[in-house]
Amino acid sequence: MNFNGSYHFEKSVKDIWESLNNPEVLKKCINGCEEFIEKEKNNFFLKIKVKIGPINASFQGNLTLKNVNPPHSYTIEAIGNAGQLGGAKGKVNINLTEKNKLTYLNYDATTNINGKIAQLGSRLIDGTVKKNTNIFFDNFNRFLNQDKSNNNQTLTPKNNEKNLI
Picture 1 (cartoon, rainbow, N blue to C red):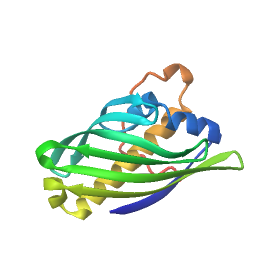
Picture 2 (tube, one colour):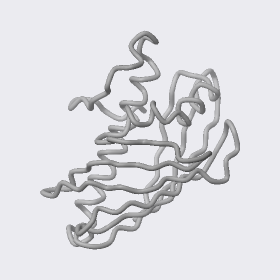
Picture 3 (cartoon, one colour):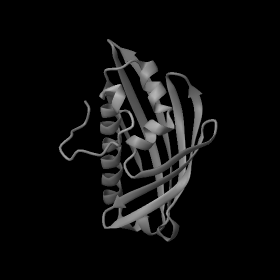
Picture 4 (spheres, one colour):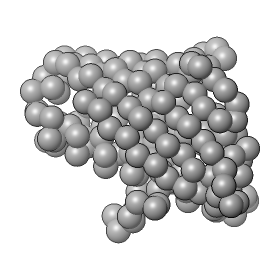
């Protein structure tokens, strides 16, 4: 499955880069993320609960940052296992550019799903991926714009929020 998108933020490339590389920020912004632990530089352990249609899946896996070009781009490679339900792996290319005091984030991703989860069908999985991507960027945008004194709060998705662009 392939998908891509873009978002813009009213912050500098430097600010966006720093936040995208902060495990605590990412843990707060990823819907269902229970653990996001740096094992070594650019290598993380993840534990995430995801609802895919009628199935609640708990994934454990690894995320690695490659082709790191601060503060402009990197590639995220992730692999996760949900036990008897199957697994998933993906690759996301992230590019940041700054123009007129806005930072533009463009991404291009590929994912592979296997096991019982794959039997749910591509339309259901595609919808779940898009929904969770939007929730992540909505949470990320709210994190960037919140008062710095509230950085410890947990972010939760809002039902009525739209894409950032």
